[in-house]
Length: 244
Ligand SMILES: [Zn+2]
Image (cartoon, rainbow, N blue to C red; front, side):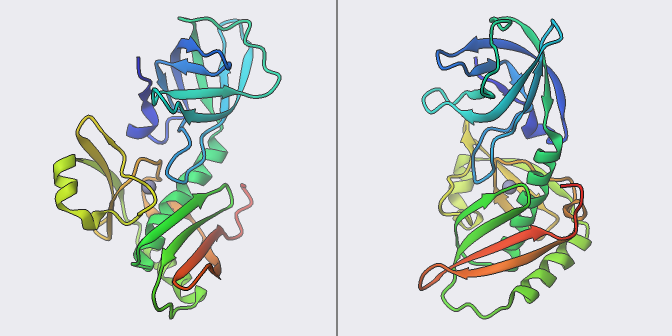
């Protein structure tokens, strides 16, 4: 049975009930439903903990997809005992929310960065305090202050972030929607998930985002690095956020 990805329809869920469906030979835990995002698309997998019926707390160090089955693997932190776990056990999932919320804010900010710099994206990575996108830019002629100001304007415009689904055929008919060449759009069951930010951005994405751009808060472009003839790595980070 495949894990129901609750984080996809509601990225703000930080707690949920679930049932253990399997424990792999390597000690990874499979659940029937989950709020833990698995590593993918440049966004790190979530950590958190499982509350067991006996009151024990089982710490999760990471979440990732199984290469073969595509199911979500919940990876216990080192030294955690799995003795009290069994197939069919009811658990309560608790997300490390501070970590995830930072990912959601920076992930959404990267969508805006791809609007501020409308060039092909060749790579990207999201962290807790900073994130980056790599662009293929033939003729870079902007400063980090100019890009920062464009981001601030879009954040302060308080654009709503929403999801919609289209068929694989519709996506194939609109190849311009795909900005990131290094990440395949999240396809499944013949449909693709698109993330819309107001009327300024629309692109396929399987990650987690905030509900409006205002939630991103204060960020800046911290560095623009030259990574080759046409390749520019643009880094963004939070400014003056003491909750991190
Ligand atoms: Zn996204």
